Length: 110
Image (cartoon, rainbow, N blue to C red; front, top):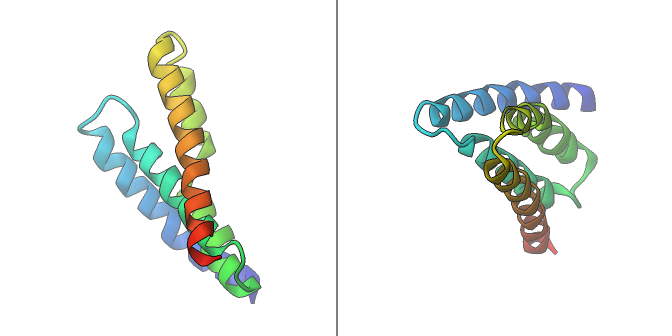
């Protein structure tokens, strides 16, 4: 049953990631869509960190796992390697906002 919940969550998270990223890339050179997606997914993971296995499978592993994206983040960083300021801004904003969002989400349920 948990595997089906992961698949269901991923089926919703992945298309949402694509749509948000696509919408923001049309307007901004900086990958703000990926930043928003990764922060939102981290926040949701914080919220569901202490839930039961079914909620964790659906919203944690499934939805958040498919919504967030380290692969696109890594490709963005690689494309920015010759622009040190943009590279560092992208790197530190994703890592720090993701961490802050996860802690905030977890603090709301504790």
